[in-house]
Image (cartoon, rainbow, N blue to C red; front, side):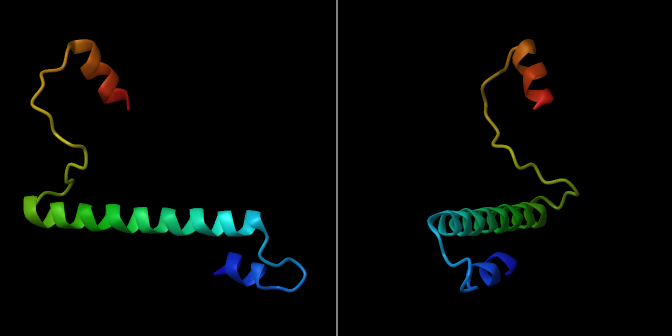
Length: 72
């Protein structure tokens, strides 16, 4: 809201940087709402306090890969 209000002022206006910034802001908002929705659905289905958000694979990982994966 603040960014849109500032860009609508006559002095500043909607420059190319302002348009790109607004598009990135909207894309991040949509992504975060999607992640929140997916988390809520998985939590309702799994009935767990901490629903897993990472995809599961059937491939067995080496010890080095597991240590690297745990650090992420």
